[in-house]
Length: 284
Length: 324
Image 1 (cartoon, helix red, strand yellow):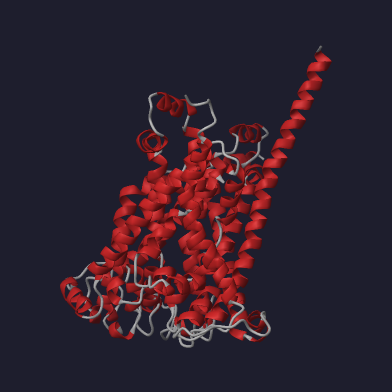
Image 2: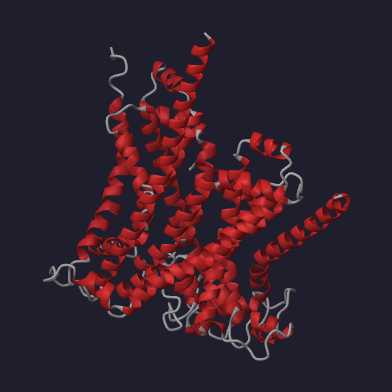
């Protein structure tokens, strides 16, 4: 017994070392594929084929020239993605806040049924409606148009749910009453007084809505068939094709370019993103 | 003069109107339309008059009874989900136990969380093509590494072997999602009443005992939530299997998921919109059942909480009555 107790601090130290080794291994596992991607983006194809290296080389310019000489136009893809993700994020956070405000502040007959309904449709997979959605847009001549990728964001059940939870905790009805007494209309109360209160929640949801839209492949792939309308995730699929078959340096560069904006966003906002992930799980 | 508290209810409807309109037009109508297409003979790139089939359920019957690829896609979706979720939840729990253990007091937790979550935020399409390039044959980085470490004599054609192709797709999903699950679980543990841990420590429980007797039971609901949302997400698995291997779903349909099947039916080759729509509806039903299950479990928790509270109140009332 005495022997066992003496061993406790020692085994604790060993345990801790093992835990650190496992965590560092996992961290390396997270970084390594992307590291290889960025490094290989600067290496020539013969260098890449001769073996693995973790040190950048000098062929970035050549790879860029090869990449852009074919059908891959990263700037076009970047701006298409930016327009779709930017506007759909604006739609998602503004109208979700509006809907959530309507659910929290006003006492209307269908309030509870409407909320239950939002809970029910939160998990409907995009694929369930894809065929009908495509046919509908085809008949409206809205394929190769960004609107069908932006407007549906106005109805984002999960964001409404989150905003409602936030408002229930952060909003006191006295503020609304005070605004009414001052003669503020309901819409201007929402736009001028409530939206600023909701900024923390809006920021979190905006990050996630933006990233989700930016990364979306399924819907753009179905709707956008003209090359000049392609978003970055569709462009990535071009890299899989025959045209870059042996140009590994350019393939890595193309991949690196599609991932780069997200790395920048992530390292600037990682604190908020991690906090947002934690919040999303706990709030349920 | 406004009468008090009467005139504002209409704003509830007005403020919810954009949501409702957009939902009706861009979600509900397409779902109903998809369901309707599932009963018709709509196919081919050029639109032509469509008819409801003589046996309206013919497409569903064909898919479930005669279509080997569709059934394979359901099996694959399940299989790929299992080989990603089981290691994912085990590793996430292990990391949660370590990160929340106050006696260990690990340093650099914030950095580890940021790095382990990172793959989740990068575009899945990019990751799919990246891994496909990393596992290239005969001279990809992974083959070079295996050769350098002496793990393989000859280059391995990872993407053409059914087992390794599936394994890698499962691994990518696992690698992208375990950080997310871990953060959710850590947050769950931080939400547990600290008094429980204090009591356990006073009773002399060690780290392992505390984890299995206190932490894990308290995490039950949050784990159920993770399980079901992961199942619904797994059901839609598309980006990775679509882009990881060309042609999508290969080799020999080993990585063909239901979403890849739907996309392939509707937008590649024969443009079988009716088959794809029927497959979508089957998927929708599975997702609906899972969602209903989640809904039921979450409601149940609130209801049981309420019951407990009522019980406590009654006991308190009794005690008070006795005291008096």
